[in-house]
Image (cartoon, rainbow over all chains, first blue to last red):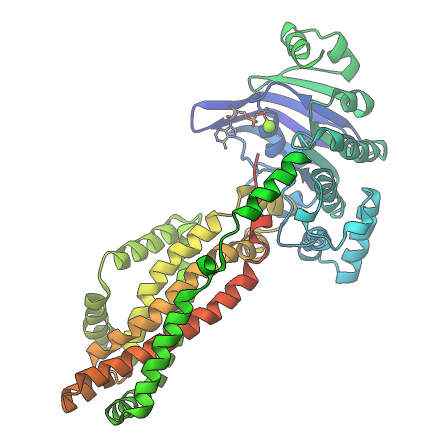
Amino acid sequence: MISIKNLSKTFNKNIHAVKNVDLEIAEGEVVVIVGPSGSGKSTVLRCINRLEVPTEGSIAIDGVELTDPECDIDSIRAEVGMVFQQFNLFPHLTVMENICLAQRKVRGRSKSEANEMAMKQLTRVGIPDKADSYPRQLSGGQQQRVAIARSLAMEPKIMLFDEPTSALDPEMVKEVLDVMLELASEGMTMAVVTHEMGFAKAAGDRLVFMDEGMVVEIGPPSQVFENPNEQRTKNFFDKILY
Amino acid sequence: MSAHEEGNKRSLSDKPKWWDTFPWWGIAIVAILSWMGYQIVTNNSYELAWDRVIPGISITVTATLQAFAIALALGLLAGMGQLSKNVILRNLARTYVEFIRGIPILPLIFTVALVLIPQLQNALGFKLSFQMRATVTLAFIYGAYMAEIFRGGIQSIAIGQVEAGRSLGLSRRQTMNSIVLPQAMRAIIPPLGNDFIAILKDTSLLSVLGVLEITQRARQFSASTFKFREGYFVLAFIYLILTLGLSLLLGVLERRMTRDDRDVRSNRGID
Ligand SMILES: Nc1ncnc2c1ncn2[C@@H]1O[C@H](COP(=O)(O)OP(=O)(O)O)[C@@H](O)[C@H]1O
Ligand SMILES: [Mg+2]
C-alpha cells in the first residue's frame, strides 16, 4: 500500500535527516517506528504525505508516485490521515466545524452528510457530547481524539501518527491509545511514531527502529524489543525502559 | 488550598482604588469637546467658521472610506504577495512596500498626483480629479503599511495549522481562506483600525492639491477673514469628533473579534 524506496531527506544541504530508507507497509498493517530524538522518524512520516519533499528516492501510495510533480497531492493527502503531536486543531472552529471543514471542501459532502459523519466519528472516539465545544474547552486527550476523528471523517486509507501521546498528561495517554488500538483492530493501515511500547506490542505488526536517519532494524515488535539483532537497538531500549 | 487563600487575600488588599483606574482622560476629553462645542454654538465668529468648514466633511469622509477600501485590497494583495511561492510576485510586493515606506507622504502625493498620474492619463486616456488622485495616493501609501500588517498577522499563525489543513487535503488557497486568515484577523484588526484613523487624519493632505475637504476650507476661511483662531479651532474640533467616534467604533469591533484571543493563543504550537 505504501512503498518507500531509498528515501533520503537533507535539510539545508548538510542535515541528513533521513538516509536511504526502504519500507513497505501492506494494507491493514500497523507499523510502529521508534528511535531516539532526531533520528528522522517524523521526517519519514511527513514525507509520506509530502509535508516534506524527499531529496532522493521514491514513495508510492497505492501505486501513485508522490515524487511525481504531476501528481495531485491534495487528493492523495485526502486519503492519508495525519495526527500530530500538538493536535493542531483549528482553534477558531468548533469541534463539529473542525471535523466538517475538509469533508465539505475536499470531499464535497453536504452539510448534513458531513455532520452525520462527524457524529459517527466523535462517537467512535467517545466524545459525541463535545461537538459544539471549542478546542480550548477540551482536555489534551479529548483534543487529540477530536484530531483523530477529524482525520477519520475523511475515510482515509492510511493513518499516520506522529507521537500522538507525547504532549499529553500521563492520565490521558490511555484514552488516546485505546482509540488507536481499536482502529488497528478494525484493520486500518497505520504508521505510528510512538514510544508507547505497550501499544507497539499490542497493535504493531512490525517495529522499525531508526537511528541517525537510517532504519537499523525491522521485525515483529516483541522480537525487536526483547531480542534485538543490533547493539544500537539494544542500547536504545535499555535507555527508555526500566 | 492555603496558598490559594493567601493569593486571594493578597489580590484583595492590592485591589487598586477606584480613582486609580477611573478613565479620567475620557472625562477630560468630553469636557474639552463640550467646551469647544459650546463656543461654536454660542459665539458668532465660531459659528461662521463652522458653517464654512463643515460642508467639506463629505469629501473628508468619502476620501477616507475610499482610500481605506483600496488600501485594504492593496495591502492584502501585497501582504500575501510577500509570502508567495512565486519569486516574481514576492519581489514585486517587496519592492512596492519598501519603495513607499521610504518616502514621506507629502512628496509622494505631489509625485503621484502631479507627475505619475498625469503621465498615465496621457498614455491610457482617462481622467482623474485631484481628489481621486490624492485618494489613490493615500491608498497606495497605506496599502504598503497594511501589507506589513497582513504579512505579520499571517506569519503569526503557527505552521502546524497550515500543515493540519494541507494534510486533510485542503488546497493552499482553501487553507489560507478557511484556517489562516480567520485566525490572523485577530492580530490584524487592531493595527488596521489604527491605520483607518491615520488615513482619516491624512486626508487633510488633500488640501495641498486644493481639494475642498475640511482642512482646505478652514485654510480658505482663515485666510479670507483673518479669523485664524476660529477657523483652526473648528477644524480641530471636527477632526477630534471624527477620530474619537471612529476609535470608539473600532474599539467595539476589536473587542468582539478578540474576545477569546488569550484562550486561543494557548492552543497554538508546532512540533
Ligand atoms: N524543517 C527542518 N529544517 C532543518 N532541519 C530539520 C527540519 N526538520 C527536521 N530537521 C532535522 O532533521 C533531523 C531529524 O528530525 P526528525 O525527523 O524530526 O526526528 P525525530 O522525529 O526522530 O525526532 C533532526 O536533526 C532535525 O533537527
Ligand atoms: Mg519527531
